[in-house]
Amino acid sequence: MSYKDLKFPENSVFLVTGGAGFIGSNLCEAILSMGYKVRCLDNLSTGKQANVDLFIDNPNYTFIKGDIKDLETCMNACDGADYVLNQAAWGSVPRSIEMPLYYEEVNIKGTLNMLEAARQKGVKKFVYASSSSVYGDHPVLPKKEGQEGNLLSPYALTKRVDEEYAKLYKKLYGLDTYGLRYFNVFGRRQDPNGAYAAVIPKFIKMLLNDEVPTINGDGKQSRDFTYIENVIDANLKACAAPESSAGDVYNVAYGGREYLIDIYYTLTKALGKDIEPNFGPDRAGDIKHSNADVSKAKEKINYEPLFSFADGIKLAIEWYKENL
Image (cartoon, rainbow, N blue to C red; front, side, top):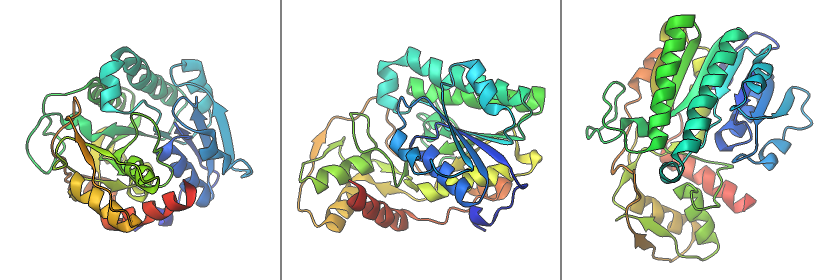
């Protein structure tokens, strides 16, 4: 069953933090298409106004410009909300190594503010973005919840702390929390620009412009690249999940494994480009291989990853061709 078949109470209100970002704006769009009310909270530090201007004329849509680092803002945003989808965070492992104090402020303090606001305002479900980076240096594949290694970056640490706070909020206060460990999400509206841009949109843009991309490392690192529709499915299925599944974390991926060099040549072939890449040093804090076991999410929150990498990359390439 797809998330599109889910039924929530009439006039349900979904608060999407970081709603002007890549994942957040896709969540806003999906929920609005289902006929429910959406509040988007974003300070536009990494999100883009253009991502949510698409919904500005929808009577079910409200935009709140505000920062999760401010508790009062979080309280006001949660007032009357039924479901919180907390996507607001600063991403990027390398950037977190350069800015650990800021990551603490946004990703830990901000998430704690949202948990507390949701608790005080009686939110039904609190679904939040975690990350596959919490697995750290644990060597076993596929990655399975409960088998975590040593953390390798401040970003990973912030996400792990968020998970522990969310578990406590379930245990101490009865707030139904669901942590989603995203694995390398890609798809429409993912930003190709900047030093910390994700690899797929960055490669696509450079190849379309006949530029030579640089692959960090030897290209033989592997990732469980996950199309955006799968992430939407996980978030909305978590909102409909039983209380018995709350207070826990779930891998969100397709369950596949793609090598970076293979992805590069998939893109050059699809875009009709004959450009060989440069190779640079490995990125600090990166792991070599990542691949998810998604059986727990399937069992506990009815997650259905319907889009494989091959399906998703075709759709992503078409979107970038039309929008870059």
